[in-house]
Image (tube, rainbow, N blue to C red; front, side, top):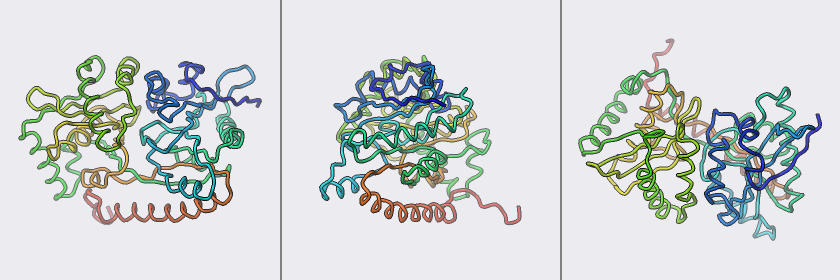
Length: 386
């Protein structure tokens, strides 16, 4: 199979039809609508340190058969798979770590495909291999030290590891729908203490005078986005010091993907005081950003976690992915899952040091997950032999 590999610095050079033919519609974060909103709004630019540099595979007729969403990074912000210590060690030894190449959903720790292959292609494995081969030559060609593929699938990580990438694991907390018909069904699966705690938390928030609306599609208005952007900026300024997403991004998101967007809004009387942005995939509700001007305890849990569970049950979705970190999610029904990334490092010395670190890290993460599931699971233990 003759394949041409090239890179483009503007997603519109590929076009929506060709992009979505490869990205599909299961995960909205790799869709043309979402990633083009990032670019067109000025959220992913060279100035923000996220210069689009998408890798494209074309067949002999010029048709796009594969894509890797790719960016040139001038820093390691907005990634959630941390390599700050690698950069520091390499530069202390006289190397130049930045700029680097990064395949990711910008600013979001969202697991999903990174090797996007045309759904109608007769030999998808060959296309994936061509994309991986294309990535392996890029750092040397561009004079860069590393290329990182974060929050990819486990299968993709294995393929890249076979091509010389270093495999890395992480851990997130996801909620799994066990065919629940309503929230009470979910509560019934928890052990008694956790069930009582969740009921108490939800009751306290309602008794404090808060109400909630899950707005989607045309129910979302500009005023809601104005208010949510205010929350987003407040949270970003306090926690990270920089808000990457522009106000225009939310308008473009609304224009291009509002049917798959759910904004959970919390109200106190008639005032919107908090919001949580979610996107709907074919099987998963993806929690993304949240913000508030109200520091009331438990408001975050209700807005981000319990409302998301309600939405997933209502729509028959299998999973809620509520972002990175957060051991507090465990007692609220979210379980630890392993995430994957792959890292191409050109310098042999840095590669050896990182490989040793990743082996130790992988063992710790596996042990932590096993311990959480065995000792801290909120779910009722089934009788032995059942």
